[in-house]
Amino acid sequence: MRMSSAEEKLKERVKELSCLYEISSLFQKMNGKNPEKLLQRVAQAVKNAWRFSKDASVVIELKDFDLENRPLPQKTVSQKSAIENSLKSYGSISVHYPSPKFKETDFLKEEQELLNKVAFEIGSYFEKKEQQKKQDLLKRSAERNDRLTILGEITAGIAHELNTPLGNILGFTELISEQTTDQSIKRDSQKIKEAAIFSREVVKKLMFFACEMPQNKEEIKIKPVVEQALSLLGQSFKKADIKVELISKDDEIEAQIDSIQLTQVLFNLLINAIYASPKGSKITCTLYHDEGMFYIDVADRGSGIDSENKTKIFEPFFSTKPVGEGSGLGLSVVHGIVKSHKGLIGFKNNSPHGTVFQISIPKKAGI
Image 1 (cartoon, rainbow, N blue to C red):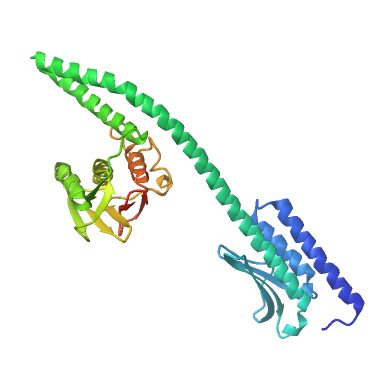
Image 2 (image 1 turned 120 degrees about the vertical axis):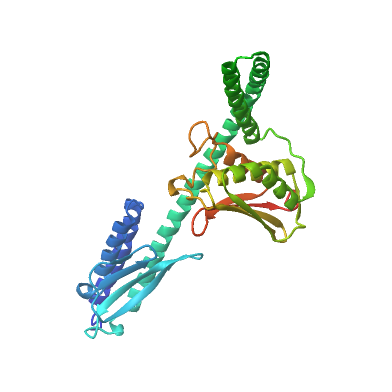
């Protein structure tokens, strides 16, 4: 089945050039709108370019899916080329003939070269898709940062404006409560007071979110800060019938941090963990470190975070709690404080259920 004439060789070259032109046109026209359909048409173009196209089968194997433009015989001989770029492998493309009707010698050297070029085109297509995704992500991130900057300026102004009237409300409510003997008025005054205190806490979180709170970083031991946060929330753990355990891998861990802001981070994470945890369960707080960072994990045994909420939980004003029970600023404040310490915060599923929040902060300021 070898070539017997110059005319046949010329026909094969024309088929190969037509294949490359068709594939290049496909990538330009379809522009990644339907990758599976695009690759089906690429496979058909490759099949048509091979010398014995009626017997040829083209297989494109990728991580996400495999594609065959016709069923493969049980036994085949084949040519194959890797779909890859300098950084990543995506899969392979191969052309098959049924065996023993055909032998490996029935494939042409020029066909292997063509297959390599097609594989390169497919690899370039996937690389461009990934670059476009990264560009889109960076664009969205920049737009989000712009919105958060504007929002921070607005919330800072709102917080300053609200502080004075809230202070007045609390002061006059205390005065009314002290001067009246009417129990109904006392109960109503208490409700006003509780609502004003809740509002003041929201304002405080707005101040944190807007980065209005100054930092006072000092070299301190981390374990006592964690112990103090757990101690201050002792009644909350008791009321919720939840146990808490502190696991410290090294009691002498020290870092340059703002202890008040770290306490705020722990408070928010632990209060969320208490809210998510069922009665009789346990929250575990783990402290450990490496050469440059210290880590605090807060693990609960709750129902976990729904997949549709995982990209939103650090956004300001997003909350899954009922109205009046959460401001939606807790995790935004945590994120802002950790970020201001040049650290990171993330979360993962706990085993067998629940959520683990992990904060990682450099032990030396400015790292």
